[in-house]
Length: 362
Image 1 (spheres, rainbow, N blue to C red):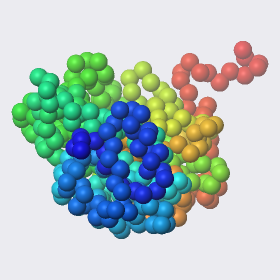
Image 2: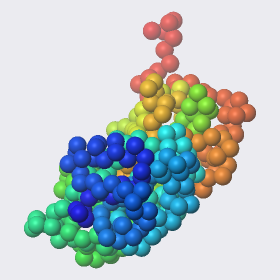
Image 3: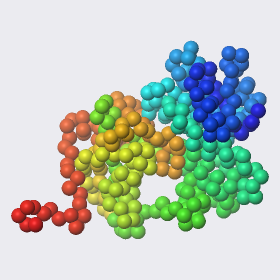
Image 4: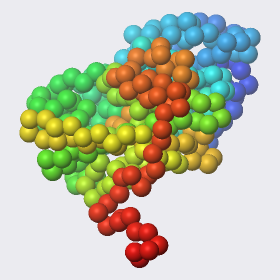
């Protein structure tokens, strides 16, 4: 049995489909026959595969497990192998932000999805880093989960993929062999791998004394649900958004941040508010946009953790009240729109070159 492969725990027909998809991408799969072996944890102790997919379903006769059982298995597998890559396959249309909070923040799942294809890329990344023991540059060990035999680039990918949900801490950097001044995940992203070699631009605040940010309140028209992002470092749920990059305008930043943090293209309809705040040694501007998902993007969510976010979800107004939020703004803006609050035209925020010409003064 290949201990670097994937263990699929389900007796449902969907497990066979998943096995075939993974094998088509040359990922070794062991499918547990629950009819003849009904103790998955004992089986895992023997197989010790580097990744596990658990099937979550409310209908246990369909071959999966209820939420409480899946949570228990996630915790027990983590105790057996701290660096195990854990995935949960859910019923179609059953994933909510509350469920992701339970599975990801509370119980160590790395990828949660109801689509078979969503597991291929992260599993390929997770498993391939376990197969490189013979390379000369494979010398590092993750300080968080102690996963070994990682190259610098492996570690650069591994850190957000495995540990994006963990609170920021100053872990010692195995490459620098010292404790960085910035949080470990931020240091790894901006000091090593493709960024360290200059292949990708470093994440950095604008050098201007005015710091500009874009936020997006995106509401799906079909069911009035809102798009929220599951922030890294256990920060809670938040609106898609972030700093406006160099040579970028706030509208471009809003589109980019939504794509990075939530894997979705937007149809931005207007502006909710433009804010300007002064602090001791800098000023801060925020533009809050209102958007709908672009055509064909209404069902999209992000499931692959990376440096930008852990994932995203469509959230109802009622669920929004119960979620752990990074701050109150998602709920405040939902209440504002529910009361019929105004959405102002995008032309409210323009560049100096976009003068308000009229027919009479052209």
